Amino acid sequence: MSRSVLILLLLLALWIFFGLYLWGTKKDGNSAVASGPCVVSWELKDGSSIIAESDATFNFSKSTARIKDLDSSLEKAVSQIAKYLKGNSGKKITVVGYYDKDEKPSNGTSLRDLALARANTVKSMLTKNGASASQMAVIPKMYDEENHANSDCLDGNTLNRGVSFSIGREKGAE
Image (cartoon, rainbow, N blue to C red):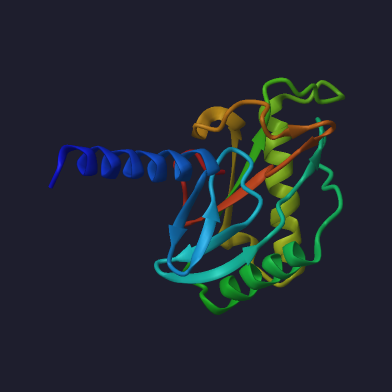
């Protein structure tokens, strides 16, 4: 192989790598999954089985636990998670509520309590859909604790992706 062909192949490989990196997507099975601090589409899996997925996220009004504009695909995902929990009484999920360090909750509420309130808002939605509260734990986290770029998910007066889920009980869950 000539030196110029080798250089061209190397440049092509670098172009593909940086192209995927800059676009922030990765391939997961048959569908492209967005990555980055404000992931809009998400899925909850138990092993390789998808329990719920949505093209929307829990968007909270800044410094509150009030969800803005609950999307129909998000309501469907909540229903799917509740159905999963009802059918799997031995399973538990952790609902993680997030806060941004620049938020200023009213009434002297701490940021940790704001994150807990957000997680409990979603936990309440799940119980209204028939899930048992005993199968859910809640945990507060500052947004950049999970390598998210701080404030990148603050869009005006909305914290995008204010809650996430995981199967099982995370360390520090209440």
